[in-house]
Image 1 (cartoon, rainbow over the protein chains, first blue to last red):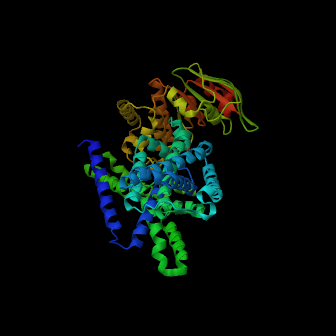
Image 2: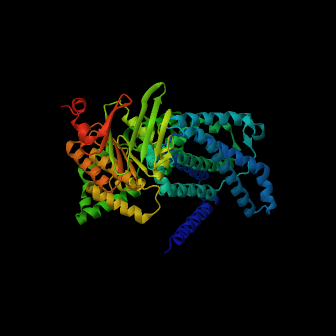
Image 3: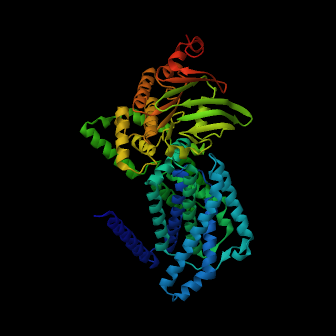
Length: 358
Length: 234
C-alpha cells in the first residue's frame, strides 16, 4: 500500500475514533467531572509535547512556555470575541460556521505565539548555554504584566465572554496533531540535526548544521504549538485570567516533560496525564493534597532521575531488543551490543536532560 | 590550499596567537605541535570560524574564509574532527555517520562513504547500532574521524586525535591518518604526541605561547636536538 494512502487511512480512523468518543462524552454518559479532567489532560498533552521539542530534543532550556501559551490564548480569544462570532454567523451560524471560526482562531493563536517565539528566539538562541532559560523566564513575566494592563482584554479582572467550545474532538485533534508534527520532526533529518545540537552543539556545527537557525526554527514551532494549546484553554471555560499564565504554569509543563522523560514523546503524554490527574485524585486528602503531590514527585525523581521513559520510548526499546535478539540468533558480529559492558555503561549516561538540569 | 597570513587572535585582552603564518598544500599532512596552552586548538578554532581573528588573513583555495561561520565551511570542503571527539552520545554509530553527511542529499554516495568508513574502521561496523556514548575512547575517536570523512572533505582538520588513548589505539589512529592521506585528502593535524605526529606527517610547525617558533619537514624536526629535548623527551 502506498505510504500516503496508509497515512490517509490512519488519519481517517483517528478522526473517526475522536468523533465517536466526542459523541460519547458530549452525550453525558460519563461523569462530567471526569470528562473535564480528560479534556484538561488533552490540553496538557499539547503543551508538554510541544515543550519537549525544544527542551527534550533540541536541548535548549526554555522555561517560559506559559508565556507563549498566553499569547496564543489571548490573541485567539480577542479574535473570537470581536470577529469570530460574526464570522460564524455570516457563515450561517451553524456547525460549519463555528468550525471555520474556531479553525481561524486557532491559526491566529498559533501564529502570534510563533511570532513571539521568533522575537524571543532570534536574540537568545544565537548564544550557547543557559541564556535562553533566563530570557524565556523574563518573557513569561513580561507577558503577564502586559496582560494585567491591557484593558481591551480585561486586564487584571480577566477576559470573559469568550465563546465556549468544550469539545473533546477539538482538544484531542490538536493534541494528536501536535504529537504527529513533533514525531515527524524528530524522525526526520531536521530532527536528527536538532538532536545532534542537543548532544554536542560544536560538533553539530562542524557537520554543517546551521545551529542558530535550527534552534530558532524548533523554538518557533514549539511556541506556535504552545499557542494552539492556549487557544484550547481560552475557549474551554470562556474565561482567561493573567494569573493562570504565571511562571508556575511554565514549571508545571516543565515538570510534566521531566517526569515523563526528556526526549520522549510518549513520556510527555504520560507526564501530562499524570500531572493533570494526580492533583485531582488526591483531593480526598484535603489540605495534605499538595504535600503528598510534592512528595510523590520527589520520590519519583529520586528513583527515576531520567523520567518515566527516559530518552527512548517503550516502542523503540522493544524494537531494539527484538533486533538484537534476532542478530544474536544469527550469530553475527553484532552480538557485541548486548554484552554486559553496554548495559553497565548505560547508567553513567543519564537522559540528555540530566545535563541541562545540573 | 590553506594559508594563514600573520593571524592574531585575542581572548578578550589576552593575546592567544601572535601573528602566525602557515600554509598547507594539496595532498600534504601538516602537523602543528606544541605544549598545552601554546595555541594549537586556538589555531584550529580560528580556521573553522569559531573564533574571529583580530588581524591577519585566512584563505582556503584562494578564498578569504576569516570569520566565516563553521557550518558554511563544511560545504566548501573543510571538515573537522573536534577536540574531545564530540560524538553524539545518544545517537547510534550509524546515525553519527549519517550526521557527517548531513549536507549531502545523494543517498548512494552516502552509502558508499559509509562503507568506506566501515572498511577503514571495522570496529565501527561491529558497533553500528550501538549508542556512541557507550563506545570506548578509541572507538569514539574512530567514529569522530569516520564522521568527519563522511562529507568528503578536501581538507581534514584533526584536533588531538590521540588524546587519552592507549598506545595500541594511537597506532590504529595514525595508520588511519596514513590511509586517509594516501587517498588524497589533505590533513592538518594538531597533536601533543609529537613523536607520532612527526612520524606520520610531511611538514610540521612548532607553536610556543602563540608564536610559531620552528617549522620544516617533519623528518628534520624529529632529528633536531631542540625538538628532541623539548618534545620528544630524549
